[in-house]
Structures are given as structure tokens and as C-alpha cells.
Image (cartoon, rainbow, N blue to C red):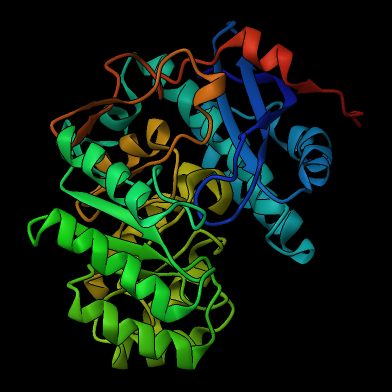
Length: 363
């Protein structure tokens, strides 16, 4: 079995133009990791930051993580993953797990490349395509007409579900905006809302009931993610499913929500939560609770994970890293299809990465 001989990391700072989604982020800092083995094969992984701090992730990657990964046999990767987890545990999870995620994705990519299989088949495919919902054409800044236009565009392309943002405007106004989109789309199209952790508990309870009356399919991140108890109250009283996960790191944080009955839709982000290794664990622990996964962003990668597990009914269309790819996820009839080539098959644009490259010191 081959051995990892090199770990390289680079950072690209990619402008997003006008703020996308609900975070208002205007740039994404992308940390791209390449692992190479002793036979010259390589795999790529990545993580990202929307609100700063990628320098810390880069430093950990080029220091401790690289030190542990170089010399690892590919079939011994689970042991190395655990070693890095334990070595970084006292640092907390917000920097350590993104760094570990990038390396983990790269190793899984390399393992699938070596096996000559697309990642989802290497993991054990449950299906060959996955439903996808539209999320990249709705922001707080848009007018109601623009929200309707963006949602209708998704529907015309075969999508049967769209996600809107709420929380930045007065609650009653947000409900009116969602109601207008519901009226324009009819009852057949699923609508989800993302609150981006902007609400307090009384507002979230009031809004949740109003959204439930509109047939909203889930209410995402209504409260700050640290408030498990508040999400329990919402899950019990708001009348619609609660979704969380883009700000959770690792299986233990997801398990806390599951044990408390605080959410039934989990949204782990592979590049942030511990990589492919940890994402699969989260899927497994969610099953006995009847919870489903709907991963955050990045369909080019998440489509593989969704196709490889039985409890991931959808992935999210959101154009976060399109500007540094030569090919985006294949979508037809409201479904995303993983590329039929070895590894995760993500095709990076080297010219775009060079244009947006920022130089950071290495250990």
C-alpha cells in the first residue's frame, strides 16, 4: 500500500461580488491541500473561511497536520485521523477540524483515485444521482420580485425545492416575502428558509408558526448554534422541522442535537466538520434518530457523500467556489450527478487559483 510523501497547501482569496446567501460574505478564503504518495499519485482536499481566520487553519495544516500525514500508509489513514484529532482536541474544533477536513478529503480522493473509482462508488454507492434544491438566487437585499424571479428560474430548470433567507428584515416583512414566493410558486414546490442564526427565541417561535402555515419545509439555523435548548423548544413548538449544522464541528456536536431532539435535518459541511471520515459518522448516528442529512453548500463534493449514504435526500445548489472550477456539478431535472471519474472529480482552474493566490508563510 502506498505511503503519503508530500502535503502541499495553498490559499486563494476569491471575491464573491455582492454578498451571497445570508451571511453577507463578499469573499471566500479557500485552503487547497494536495497529498502525493510514493508512486506519484495525488489527491486534493480543501476547506474554507467566509469571515476570516484562514491563516490559522493554514498554519496548522502546514505544521502539525502535515507532520502527521506525511509517512502515513493510505490503508492506515483512520489511525492517523484519530491521532490528529487527539493532538488538536485541546485547541477546540473551529480551526483544528477544518484543517483536518482538508487533509482527510485529499486522502479519500487519493484512495479513490488509486482504486480507479469515483468517490461515491469507492464509499459504496446507494444511488447514482441526488435531488438538489436551489439556494443561490435569494438574498436579504433582493426585492420580492427578484426573489420570485430567482425561484421561478430554479423551477424552470427542473428544481422542485428552493431556499430563501430570513432574519435580516423585520419578522413580519420576512413572512410576507416568503408568502409572496409561495403564492408565485404554488403548493407543489418545497420552500425552505435559512435564518443564519439571526433570531431570538420569541421571534423564532412566532415566525416558525407563520412559516408552518405557509407549508415551509424546514427552518434553518434560527438561533445561534450553541443554543441547543432553544432549538429544542423550537422543534417542539414551532410546527416545522428544524435544520442545523453548518456551524457545528464533528459528530459530538451533532449528537448533542440528536439526543436532545433539537433538530431533524442535519447539515454537516465536509470541509469544516472533519472531512469524509467524520461526515460518514454523522450520517450513521443520525439514522437511529430518524434524522436526515442535507449538506451545506459545495455540491461538487457533497454529491458524492449524498449518493453514498441512505439518509441524505438532497444537496444544496450554491455557487460558492464556481469561480475557481473549470466544471461545476452536473444538474438535470432537479438532480445532481457525481462525475464518473476516479476520486471526487473536482476540476480546479489553475489560472483562477493563481490569480487569487495569497502568500502565507509555512512552518
